[in-house]
Length: 365
Image (cartoon, rainbow, N blue to C red; front, side, top):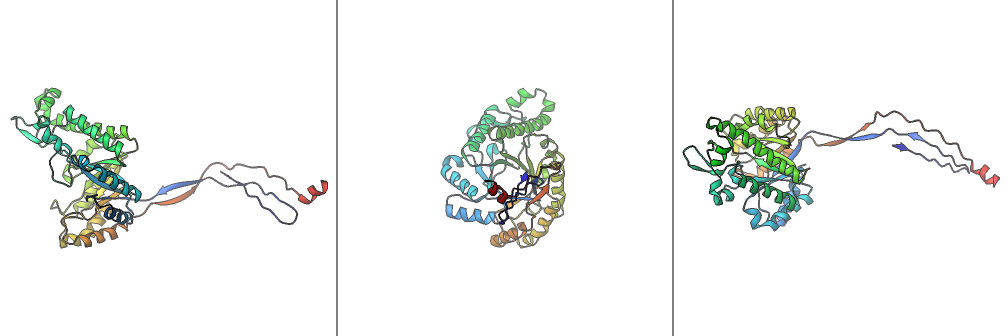
């Protein structure tokens, strides 16, 4: 960039001072952690929702997670669209969590999968022929339906990404006809199930990117499922890996928070992915509430790319106090800032223009 300075001196002489070289300035976004807040509340009262989103945004939050279950989009699409637009207007991006689709993922409402209920032929089948209340992810009809649902949601609602919460690979090895056809070797079925689950997730995230290339893809695990990390990091279309650091809910020592967090952060960064760590600010009794700050500090010690928590979520002894404490803790997170850096491009020499004497010029005329 060249900066031209024209200096006028009011003594009948116009002097053009030109040209000063100004190095290129580069704007770099430097900072630490983003904030995401789960908002698992009805969208039926726009004034309440707008107030909530403004309060969330005031903490420095950049994204919310909103969960949807299979039957909800069919019953109140106008409310969903209106609510997500209110999030946009508040400056919040929306990550949509697909709650209990096929009973393969967690969701805030404990409702069974509508698809699995209506399509019993898709259910996982054990070696004894008994069916289980979860759809087999190798069934082409289930995959086709699920991926079409994702395409529809991305195309029709203001969504910035898709989040899958606590994936549930079936606890039993599936012996359904589809899995048996794909893996004739019965002795390999258990390993095949794990491989095909990762393949299923890869195809799911690829669908997200195909429909909306700039959409974020996020997978959040429970600590007991961190053994999936080695396979998850190989999924090219997965952007962010998270973990629910729910030490109290899992009856673990609070010191585990930092250990779990570092495991996720180190693995994610090693494979050029982002990390997201979740604070347990729900289901807290008075003693758990007193430990909230300590667990938050342990989470920060893991140095994640993103901190996540909940807005007024369930079963706290004092919901108001827990949110106020959470809000104060979030304000400690380093904010992203702009830093200007000079370019290292070589200096360009510009010839100096001659001084123009206005008085002489007018005399000549």
